[in-house]
Length: 141
Length: 485
Image 1 (tube, rainbow over the protein chains, first blue to last red):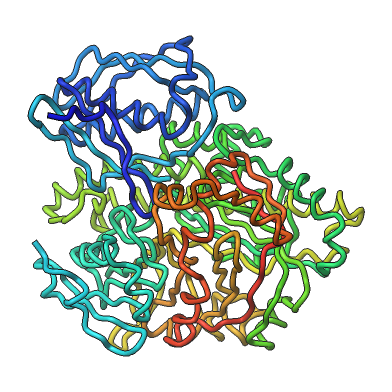
Image 2 (cartoon, rainbow over the protein chains, first blue to last red; image 1 turned 90 degrees about the horizontal axis):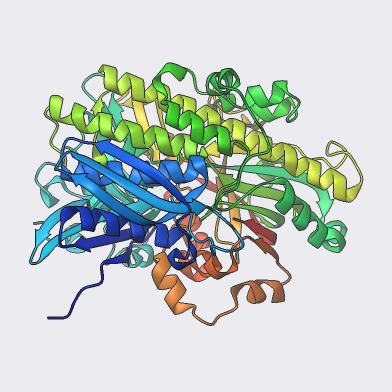
């Protein structure tokens, strides 16, 4: 079996889709977050100098994925931070608690790319697959 | 499962295609797509037509779920989608407006000729690039308090005007005078406020742009004269919206609407179409928050217009008024508005969703500025950065058929990834510069995603509108300088 990458992005006419995979739901959520930030900056240039605690709730797993990514996007925009590491401490179908690590956006060092407007609910999926979980969502660019 | 949409489409005439309700069980009305055969073929492999069918599921939808010729795959609604709902029993859907609430376009004319601008074009572009913040991480130079932000939500472009940002005529030349009634700051979250405070007066990134252009063709002399457009004259055209403020309002209300859709037992083929009855608390709150975001966007474009005039005045050494820098018009193309329309011969108030579609009211309509009353509302249609853009005018036929709506641009043809792959190794900036177009862009590596190849030819799109009679071609402009995030 060919191993699938932990995260990847896919084409959509106007916007961009992301996929996160993991052995656990938490890992898949963390990888989806990496996919999202990989569209904004070069992940390997981010130093984990700041930490943010994230706690979000939703009515179901799909809604939770949207809430999780939207929360990170909000923090990123308001505090001008970019993240490349996400430790999920607790996750259920309706609540996630995590810590995100990163630093202030540096236009010279981080190779800024896309500006992400929001997390849509189009093609939204949280699926149990062989060997774990796969999550998918389209981001509005 | 649905069968292929191409074989289900019924040809009405060369520019109209009907998607019958039998295409997908649950459609309340048929779809109607404005396109010629060539444009229709560009939609193959894209989900846009499926999304036309999905919009037809929404309760209270009247007439048709419509798509303009720049239609392409969006989320929820197709981009280029128009749908009107009855106030009684109909719904409002944030997905029918989009995250970038009141994303729109503004056109400013000048008395300047290309020959006058050419020698200072580089300096003008530099000045505009400095004065209008753009790109990832950009912060607006305006710092507003929470109370001031409340006033912006309530008053839109007029708030900026009160602070000297703009000319009094600007409001007349702005859709809805740059202010939608019914905005309520209490319906807007703290988060939307925070994002808005950071980003007031910024252009954004992606397909948002500011261009210096020159009028290169006029198709309707009378309308062009009324709009102040003349061959050889320089104009400024820019495209942006409500920034993080609107994005957060939409994000917040999608969660509210998902719950509401369950509460009101509305069956949806796509979660992004989440909606609530127009007469429910959730529906009313969304419309009040959406109006606040729309007003934020008008204030945002008003500030950018002011800095644009300032940049011209600075570089050319003459006040903007002396340069003839009056506003032609400002249109919203992501919005839901309650408007009066004719349905089966009766006058009726409807909530018209325009998702990547522009209002196009005809000559004589009370909402068309007096100085354009004889020719119709200006419709601003950006193309892509390498080719050209158009100005059109609204028509009676648009009023009768499309709730006074038309296209909003060229429409994407290729995804960002496909464009980047197919243009690998091509120096897009160099190619534009070789044609005399000055480019100022924050991130050169991403410019391929916005290259001409990624878009439909806007001339084809505008031709369909003109021949279908839902807008009239007035003028075409070509870019001289492109500023992007």
